[in-house]
Length: 112
Image (tube, rainbow, N blue to C red; front, side, top):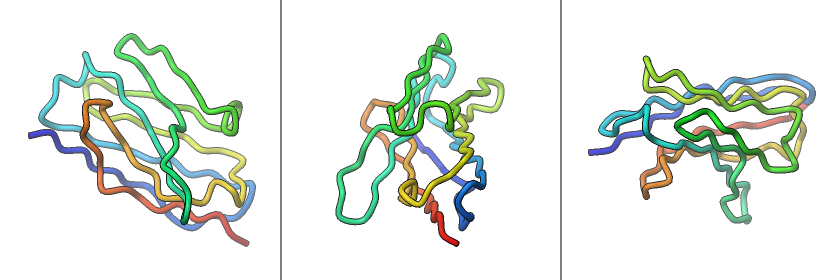
């Protein structure tokens, strides 16, 4: 079955950086679009970034210029490089294959 495992979250100060990773199994990764969502307390889960099988990327307006999504098909892994982090980036970040599968989530907390 499909398994998505996120890692890399943590506590970071405003202006800092984190890189999230999502290791995928049970799918033909190189043919699969992948995405990162996030959910803050009391809010809906929103799309942050996506990357298609041919490496086309899309970003939420709130993260454009700060976050970068990438993929390594040899490692079946998708990444989210997050720079210039803000308080409002605090959320649980989830990886998805847009096929109904989700990871367990990784907490990102931006705090001084």
